[in-house]
Image (tube, rainbow, N blue to C red; front, side):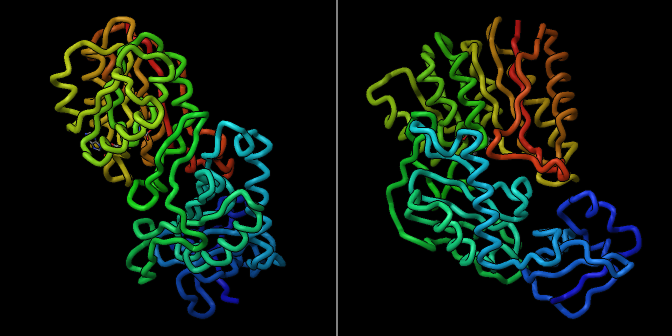
Amino acid sequence: MYKVYLKPGKEESLKRFHPWVFSGAIARIDGQPEEGEVVEIYTSHNEFIAKGHFQIGSIAVRVLSFLQDEAIDADFWKRKLAIALDMRQSIGIANRKDNDTYRLVHGEGDNLPGLVIDIYNRTAVMQAHSAGMHLDRMAIADALYEVMEGRIDNIYYKSETTLPFKADLYPENGFLRGGSTDNIATEYGLKFYIDWLKGQKTGFFVDQRENRALLERYASGRSVLNMFCYTGGFSVYAMRGGARMVHSVDSSAKAIDLTNKNIALNFPDDTRHTAYAEDAFKYLDHMGDRYDLIILDPPAFAKHRDALRNALQGYRRLNAKVFEKIQPGGILFTFSCSQAVNKDQFRTAVFTAAAQSGRNVRILHQLTQPADHPVNIYHPEGEYLKGLVLYVE
Ligand code: SAH
């Protein structure tokens, strides 16, 4: 096995179970591991400390195990996936009659850095974010099929856009098992078409489930604007919650098609909903003051730290337009999914926008990602979704 030796003192974060080794922490490597191969990590005192997937880049090793005698083999994958499933069952999300949509594996949050698995009814969509998970995909798929024991028929692999393309891995999207075209899944009793072939992420934003359910409770009798609607998730919940009218906006025509299909699937012939393909900033400029419940769930404005300043400006401008126009007594659900923007920075951007409007604004809820997207306590970077529910007088 290849051995990676750390520089003196660079083992501290691993001792606290942080799952990454940065390339700058490495003193030398015995041999020349290929990208994605499993390597052992040693301190400068030659003590074993962890093992994980090697990769060229700023994160050089993603830790899979802190135990020297734990082999990364078929049994390892089965054990890890069984733990992940067990957790989803014990928190009551993987065994509800009205729900077959949940995240089974959330990377570092499930001690499987670089791996995401979402379950949509009878299909699991698996996504590798590291070369190592890509190389191990067949073993993982076998283990997944076994651990899910008759709950799934299909495993779709979707990593064309999530792997470092310099690594020459040539991942091809496609089924590793089964091959169904039935892509309707159920979330808390509502039906959604999941576009795992062409959609963003694994085809659906599973991470907004609890926030959508909260929105439903506020929707009764309100005029709702769902900005950045994508699949129309928030809109469908608003409809069930008894909204008076729901408008969905997204700049992508495909997203608007999908939203219309999802509304029709749940509320055929219901005339309360209309969807518009338009840029968010333009729409907010001319929308007037007809809404009293607005959702802002933009794409990650900052994917990297360098983009932080612009991202914060973006959040401020976007929220300022809403504070300017939302009805008195209106409710704003506002989100940021940028990993590089932390909770305080996001809150400051929204606070600045509120102050500009001069309106009285109260925080009703502070939202985050749901329990099936857990944060590894030793890896706080895993907390990425931030949301505020605001009451605007
Ligand atoms: N709220 C959604 C997820 C939103 S993802 C859900 O719960 O599923 C972000 C969406 O913003 C994408 O669908 C993307 O097409 C859209 N988008 C990106 N830039 C935009 C812009 N300038 N104006 C409007 N929509 C935009």
